[in-house]
Structure formats: C-alpha cells, structure tokens
Image (cartoon, rainbow, N blue to C red; front, side, top):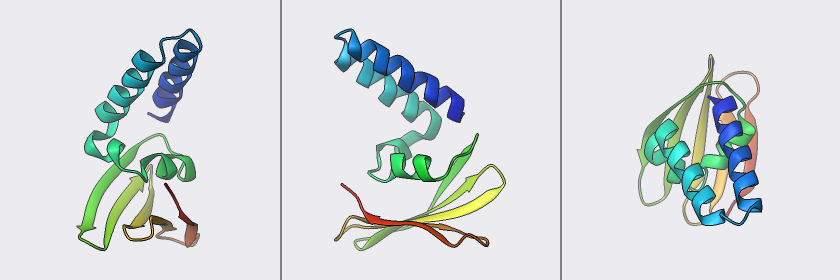
Length: 108
C-alpha cells in the first residue's frame, strides 16, 4: 500500500506542476481516505506514515478524550503506538518492541 500512496503522491505532484493543484490535492485526499478512512484526516497521520515505513497499516483507536488520542498501529508485523497530546500538539510514536520511542515532537 505504501507504493500505491507513493504513486498517488507522485501523480499529484506532477498534476500540481501543470496547474491543477486543487484537483491533485483532492485526488490525494481521496486516495488516503480510501486506504485508511478517517485516520487520513488526523494531523498526525502523515507523520506516522513517514516514521513507520511499511507495506500495510492497521489503525485502531485505543483512547480519544479531551487530553490525548492514542492509536495502536500494526505496520506489517510490528506494533506501534502513537500518542497525540491535544493541548501541546505533541506527537509521540513508540515501537512496542525493542526500538522504544521513535518520534517525540510538537507538530502543526
């Protein structure tokens, strides 16, 4: 699936260079939504894809309250957890194995 997204992003880049940026942006958004549903609209979504390179992703919301959103991510055969803190816009991505924390920054 990562390859599909790369193709979609590449096509969008080419189309935007030709002056059809609104159409290209819509195509990218539609493709992302098709792959991962509402998760594609989250502010942390692209950071997750960038930090966790995999062929297939499975997202599952563990917690989403006033303070934070916690998403469990299975990427290929590895398990990760993303924690997005609303108040500070901080994203923490953790590998649930031996890699530990792989990302910890404010985004947005």
